[in-house]
Image 1 (cartoon, protein in one colour):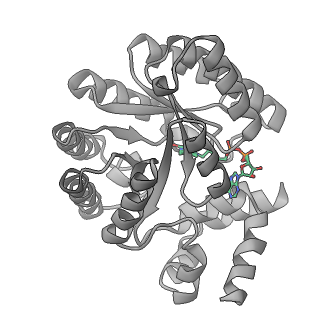
Image 2 (image 1 turned 120 degrees about the vertical axis):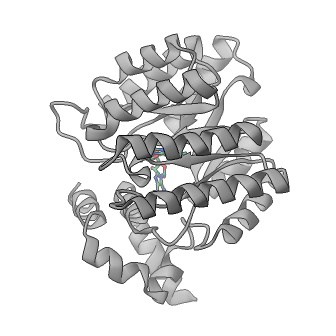
Length: 304
Ligand SMILES: Cc1cc2nc3c(=O)[nH]c(=O)nc-3n(C[C@H](O)[C@H](O)[C@H](O)COP(=O)(O)OP(=O)(O)OC[C@H]3O[C@@H](n4cnc5c(N)ncnc54)[C@H](O)[C@@H]3O)c2cc1C
């Protein structure tokens, strides 16, 4: 718990981030979880994953930007990614964060630029998955997802099982026929709004997963937790949901052992493939989820 708190704290340090993102040594450390610094690096990874039978979602890393120029750069990066998805015929969606599209300082700019990405994705055709960030963004993120879905259809929202409010939010999305990615939640939220223990979060995840399998549209279950995966598969079988009626999602590099098994079992699995220069907060959240990764990464570093 202490390691998680410290790593999440470090994930928000701007000066440390600036120093680390330009360090060659750090880049070697991150390659397990981040597909590369450039779009071409990520495309090569996506092609390989598609060839193996895995679906992907491309995430051009970035969050909490502070200027319109950065928002426009993010939009351009996503438009370029979508051009490549179309050109290469990849089985890929894109995932983006609204704080990367300026939600912190201009909702109008954020809506406009996200809408350009959603429109371009519709023409590919593919969809845009709108990541969920910390609690202060939840209402505004859901509002954007609803609005984009009404206008264009090709968006997926995210629900975090650790939030106590999530059942209401999920019901609202299901009523509107909006596809959902369900995850545990990666931020630090107080007990007044979020479940804290592993058992509570798992129980919430399973109850929301049941609701999604019964009433959701092509649900996505984003977890590496084998206990949850087993229960979801069982519920899907019992409810008569075919393997093509839902998908699991995992982060690139986290459970390579499970990926093979999923394919052998005929399950759909989408990998979340992040790339780009702004990898620091993403990478630190991955370490916070699983501090043992620190040891693993350092060992790899000294071996190579
Ligand atoms: C595709 C995808 C999209 C996501 N999108 C969002 C989002 O939009 N918003 C959000 O708040 N969160 C998001 N998350 C993160 C999520 O909320 C969790 O923080 C994260 O997935 C860890 O939870 P878990 O369900 O995998 O279970 P855990 O209990 O954390 O992990 C289960 C097991 O998986 C393995 N494992 C898990 N994480 C790691 C890791 N980093 N390194 C190595 N092994 C690991 C370990 O073996 C662990 O015992 C996403 C996760 C995925 C997979």
